[in-house]
Image (cartoon, one colour):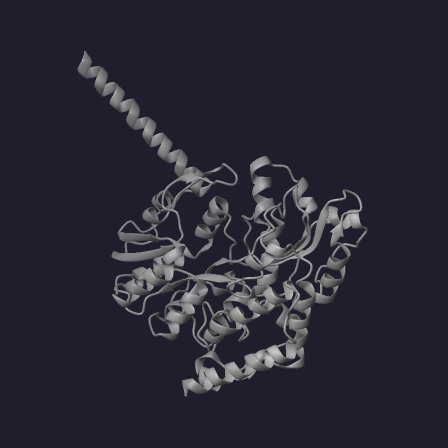
Length: 459
């Protein structure tokens, strides 16, 4: 009797677990049947910076998240049952060092990483061009990606723009977001769809001080004064037509530096004037902890993501904050700004190129981007990201900004930009906030001389 009872219980558990697994798969695939795509065999080693492998809880919304392991079981493993994936999860904190070591020791085939890292590895000869694989694969359509990114990003294109070494997988969101309630309190007209630096500065000045309705201290403006990639500075160079340099990253020795032009002086003069408007902590990226939330006291946020506001909406399904914090384009002439792109790339010495390409294509494709958006709010790189929540104005705006994006030499792929220009500009901002900024032209003359010396030392 006991034996039969145990068998019965075992059967019930088996059916229950099978049912749970099926339900879980349906949640991942929206109920679509996932079938075999290929009998291709192989082993592919994948190093992912920052991806979560196990199921968990979103700390901002409290919603359950599906880890990559379960996602792959429900999708890729069924599509390619004979391709074995060896997945390595790497924290962003040491992603560059760890992934660099894996590339040098030939212990990895596919990597998801930061755009600046990918660009450097390509220039160091550690990554494989993908053009031949793209041309040979009739199922792969490059036009599915935002063309401003596909055609121009240094994170996926060779420095001369002729080779494709990466597939764009995740975008950074850098928008102008403003507090419509504070604008109303101060009687200031809303920002235009593509605001200029002059408009932003003029309206921000009007809203710095004691709020006429609440009596609370308001700040007209915020941006991150110690940005590692100088994104606000880059957006301003685009707005003022300050190139900063001419040439090609493929031939760094012959770059012509243009850091002390009248247009660049305008950029620095704007930063000097604007530095008086944010909370003092902005020079250390502090003071905007409540931006996008009910207790906000900042009128305009540059290079914002809308993440806090959207998380509140996802947690409470209350659209009031979405209405209060509308987004507009960035500062460039077409609304463009600096757009971060994190790509998938293939190691130069990938062991199984054919299988690795299938993995790379899948992980940077539509289904995976949908999965990453729904679970982790990642911004897709697709022209038709129809899975984006209709209420998510911030991702939609980010896609608009990315579509008009273009890379200039004021970019993280430029080694002198990252090593010298960004720290120097951040130092200038810090001094401006303290009321003792140097003369803009003098500062830029010194930076120009430093750049020319840096280039000369490369020869």
